[in-house]
Amino acid sequence: MTIESRAPGGTLQNPDSNRDVDDHTPLCAAVLRALPDGVMILSADGAIVSVNDAFAAMTGFLPSEITCASPPCWTDETGAILLAAAEGGHPGTVDVDLVDNGGARLPVTARFLAVADEAGRRVAIVRRRTDAQALARDAQRWRSICESPMEFVVVVDRAYRFVYVNHVADGIDVENFIGKATPLDFITPEHHALVRSAFERSVAERVTTSYEVRVPELDRWFASVVAPVIEDGEVTGLTIVTHDITDRQRAVEELRKSEERLQLVMEAADVAAFDANMTTGECFISPQLYELLGYDPGDPELRTRVSDLRERLHPDDASEIVSALTRAAEDGVRFDAECRVRTKSGRFRWFRGRGRRASAGVGPLRFVGFVTDVTALKARAEEEARSLSIRRTTQRMEELGGLASGIAHDFNNLLVPILGNLELVQRGLQADRALLPHVEESIQAARRAQDTIKRILSFARPTEEMRVDVDLSALLDEVVQLTRASAGPDVVLRADVTGA
Image 1 (cartoon, rainbow, N blue to C red):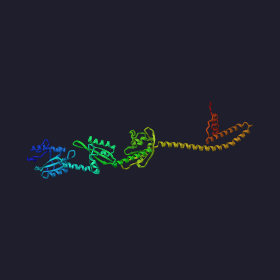
Image 2 (cartoon, rainbow, N blue to C red; image 1 turned 30 degrees about the vertical axis):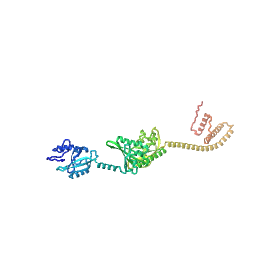
Image 3 (cartoon, rainbow, N blue to C red; image 1 turned 135 degrees about the vertical axis):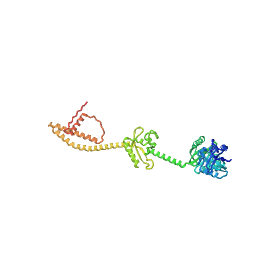
Image 4 (tube, helix red, strand yellow; image 1 turned 180 degrees about the vertical axis):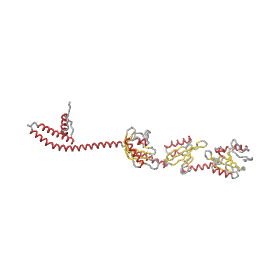
């Protein structure tokens, strides 16, 4: 069939439903529209001049989108191949890849007719390429991907039996593997439910799933991605791509053990940790710090931003602590201070905080450290201080007692001759009654002085305590007399004792 315009001014146009390919050849246009294959007309320079409805439907583009200088349905490589075939001047068939409106590859075979019009335009019949050669190329491409040395790729049927394994599985007994073994045969029993769930979900929902399992025979961990194999609208099996994650899993396990050891050490030492982002104000606190403040770990009632924690400081401590933290964060000096912090109950407890700047110059400014509850230590320190004060007071009293004892002994030694002489004077003045009262008063004073010395001595040395009845009036009278003697003549003392 020759497609050309013989009438003057005749042109080849897009064969859509409202317009003929050539205004003067309606039969030709009708034939093109009726063809089940795609038809495209190329200019001498390889540009698409016109396409039929079948070609437009094949690519998913409108005819007006295809007939342009740079058609979206092919690449530069495709255009070069078609142009070379069109310039051959004789019938030829080429396999090329077009691109549909979804961006997917569209393999086709283009067969050029032997005729052309005066302008050198040629017609190509285009069909989807589903021949054995195309299928073989696709299979080879898929196999090249599957046989990547980095991954273990298998395909299983609906019973989960292996039907394909890539070369990573070299060395296995294929005869007892393909069609017989399943992935469940190589994993620990506790992972069976996890793997079955992933398989069943991929089949039922036609989605990609994943799982991580341990293979005990190899003592290695593997991560697998599962995708359904769909043929003629039905799920016929599963493709499983597996990657060895043993190194990653061991690193995670080492990190877990390290964190566990740190937690045990912190619990044994009764300390808590914090990590404050001084740039954003966010702060991480360990579970131990929650508990020290009276909260359950993670309790949202405890707001953990830096500003929120600052509000928990005792008003008398806040200014000093904030200044010390700021200086440590800015200058890089170590922080070590004690302060009172309000707990959930509203009571304040003593804490000691130690930390340092974790980063400077690069990234956010972080401050990390440890916190210890020192309330009991502070209480013991205060009790020890009180005990020390009592011991010192007791020691001073003992020293004072020793001093008083020495003074009392010396004073008593002075009173003995005075009292003896007064008694001699008393005997010699029996006849002179006028002076006798004065002598007797002096004797009484000396005896009271001796009684005072006895009391001082009893204070200065430990004695067994005794409770005795005292004549309070007589005692007060003696006190007044002693006080009057020591107060001097300018002081007037008067005792007014009202007894029952």
